[in-house]
Length: 529
Image 1 (tube, helix red, strand yellow):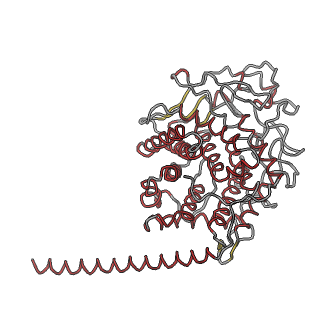
Image 2 (image 1 turned 30 degrees about the vertical axis):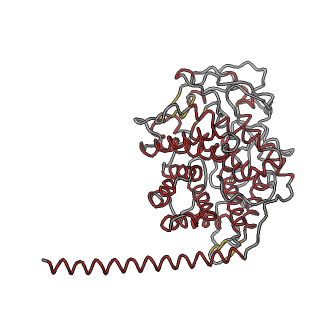
């Protein structure tokens, strides 16, 4: 008996030393690799913090794009820049003793869908954090911050207790049976909530991401407000993660318009932003060791959208790897490398002459994935590309390798520029898909407020005469980024063509982000804190 135990002890000690030597070997190789990378980066071109020249076309487009947030506002309007908009939704939330009057309508209707609204806020926050200086250089930063706060004020009020969150105002089925200006709404505006018995992990986690990222935006502007946002973010993440369940089950009416394909991406997205906002290492562990392999979908890049946050997670955690890897334990660092590898696979797929270039594009080079709201993926990919390009420049990373071919940061920037230029009119239709930019843009945008004259008196049903009118919209939805072209690069400018002609706030957040990145050049901040 004793002899057997002694023999087992020798085997255990041998196994221990074998594992220890292996781990040391891996650490040595990793350290050597990182040293080589540091040496390589030190020889790469240096970037400077001063701005390059302003590209006036992009400055003009940015000034137009940010105005669509004003077009979409609900509530008691302040410093209203849109002459045909007025107060609306003033009683939203009142049946539950809440003030849910603020926030934004998602698209051409009058519903406040929490899921896409929170995504709008997260992407707008990210744009401000990365390119706030560039926004400020062309006098658009304050407008972007004010628009963000209009959403986050609403989100705070929609979260009255840790495990209760109101995710929707209005009944989309009833709303879509009416064609009215939001100022003239006559329908009941029921509220939808998620809670411990009716969970909604996707929307709660996306809102946690929105609040965490916004807390960074307002940290130096209003520290009390920033702290409140971060507190709500912590609570919403805990709620989302503890009581897991799809909001598409809880909210079948919203599901028909914004169906979620799963909540793992939102959990990673929220935890990533909470790590950056709080420096709490438990969130980094969550996205790496605890749930990276489970939810990360490593080495399988996809397209960013209101439904899929994984591309955003991959680029955001690549930022951590670019600028903060030296502070991250080796086990977590290896997971960060997997996120970065997946991000680089995505970047390689975007470059048109890469060996792994995606075929999901039009003949003229526009990224094109789906016929509904096709520009969502184009501008989303462009935003991530310009971010990754600037991460490379700021970190002194000279090259991106795609199946044996090397590309410079400027190649990613050129790709982003090609997508934006297409949107602004350099396309076979010679049409600007950004309403108000240039001379030729859609005149029949699928948008209730834009299509009905301000002085018209309409009820629920008789407003449809304005939907079916042959006259152009009497009110210009300035800054609206419409759905976009079909794969054959055609566009039918018809108010009934919601597939191509309906704008959205999340499209606007993405085009604001990429325009802010292209309006002038500079390095990005290595830390948001």
